Each structure stands twice: as C-alpha cells, then as structure tokens.
Length: 420
Image (cartoon, helix red, strand yellow):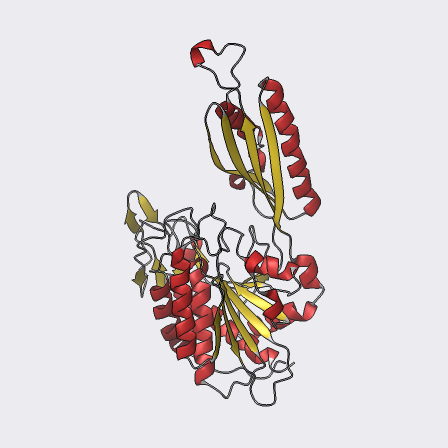
C-alpha cells in the first residue's frame, strides 16, 4: 500500500480549490434550527443545484439531487477495479445560524503579512492571540470582512472534495475503485440525516471533510442530546400577584441558573462534557428553554439528562402552581466504537496522511458531523481537517494551503482504496 504516490504540485491543487471556495461561500446557506423541513432554507437548494451542475460539467454522468436536497454523485471504477469496495466523501451544504451568512464577502490575502487584520467594529484577527494565524505569515489565507461568518464550515470541505474530483478526472492514470460523493443539508441543525437515502448508498466506508487545522483526524465525537424544557406559569395582574403568580419567565431563568457553570462550553475542553442553554423565551404564563447536552461518555450524557428532571422539580418547588416538563431526545452518539470495529478505515487514512508527509494527530470532535450519524447507521466515517479556524464567527478564516492539503489527502485516499 505504500507505493509511490502521485505527484501533485501545490500550485495545481490550489488553483482548483481556491476559486471554488470563493464562489461557494457567497451563497447564503444558513440553516434554520427551528424549521422541520429538510432542507430548512432555500439557499441550500441554490448551492446544491450549482454543485450538481458542476459535477455534471466535470463529466460525471451519475448525479442525483434528491427531494430533500442531497447531492449524490457516483464515479465508476477504473477498468479492472469494478469489484473494489466503494468509498464515499461527504461535506455539508449549510452554515450555522450563530452568525449571519448573508452577504459573505471573502477576503483573500495571497501572502499574509503577519500583522493584525482589522475587521472593523472592534474585531481583529491578531497573530499574538492566534498561533495558527501567526504560523501563516507569508502564506495565503481567506478571512471574513467582519460582518458575517465565512462559511469554511463546511464549504472548505466541499471545495476540497470538488477540487480532488476535478484533478482525478483530469488524470485517468490514477486508478481507483467506485466512488460516491455526498453533499448533505442541515448538518448544523442535526436534522438532515433523518431524510438521508441510506438504502441507495453503496459506500463501505466514508470520510467527512469537516474539520480544522492541518493534520487533525477525528474518529470520536460527543454523545449529543437536545432538551426542550417547558414552563407553565400562573398569570395574574402583577398588582394582585402576591401568593398567586407563578412567573414562567422567571421559572425559566431560575432553571437556566441551575446549570453548573463549571460544566458549560466556555468552562470545558478536551473530553469534558457540558450543558449549553441555547434559546430562552417566554412570558408570565409560559416559557421555554432549549438546552444542548454533550458528553463523550454515554452514561455521562444520560446523567445530565436526568439532572434536568431534578432541576425541574426544584423549580416547581420554588414556584407553587407552576409546572415544568423536560423533553429530551438523543441527536447522535460517539462514533468511536463503531469505527474501531472497522480498523482498516482509519489505517488507510493514516497511511494516506503519512504518504503525503502530513503529521497527523487524532483528536476528539467537540461537536458532531454527519459522519457521526452515518457511522451510527453502519457506514464508518472518520473526519478530516479542512484548514478552517474560528468557525461560526465573524473571526473565521481558512488556510488555503491546508484546504489544498485536504484535497490532496482525498486523492491519496482514493488511490489507496483502489489498491487494497
């Protein structure tokens, strides 16, 4: 498996990946957390249709755009490789709603000078505070203009896959087995994969491109739950409230204050889990609180869910006549156990990285990807870096060289899967 790799110059792959990325991020694909439809927003259709057309323009004849906005392309195997296992590559169409994705105006610094980048409004990219940025002095980066997020999560992944495909199709001497390319909607909301057409997928293994700095490979993620807590109060004129009023808005605030600050996203890292209140709203009569629960250990996540029920009882005791109802459901589970049942999927990834002299490291995803759900559904799906930093923020930036390295890694993975 360690035969000489195909020689791909940095200039070749950069020329393929950069214009694609700059084109994709200008399309507003912000997903909507509180909409049940898949996709949740029309902008995802716009990007999906563009990608379907680009795939066809590359000469791929089997391109499908499903009723729920999945782009699925299939590239047949090279002659003599038809019986080899099908391998897939996946990235998501949508961007997070944490910061607006409307009117993204990407800024390409072809040779970053190493200084502070003033984005306006008090926002700055400062290499003194960002070692990754400092290390990119003299290299190409793409950053926001400070008014929106960038969309590197996950349009850097899409650009990397598309660039790899374009290179592969221009170089038929790179033999390979059957390939599947999947672009999915609503990853950021966690609602996209319930509509995933699993029965049509042929991949025995898949790789998501939805990661961070160069060399980061991920095979484990949080166990994720979402809880919606409903508060029913007793409303009355506030001038007559003594002994009668149960203020639902205050009940929700009291509940939120019970969540341990030491177990919040801002207080944890590594393998530590957390509670994260996301949305709180209401009035005297009714209120609601949405909470994310994350833990790498499934019993730990379940313990946190049970704690919410204890907090509910405590709030009811403080507000006579008020009622609290906790509705919690799992979103995805840690993918490590199922990936470890298929060690060859990770070993080929490690070999590909080593062949490209990429110093890789395994790290846990403090979040999840569509790969988490695919793994749960039976297709082992590790995650690969894309070069993105500061995702979901106005300080987001992407390393062009690392985005290109991810595209090279895809090509090398394809080559190796065509040799096993």
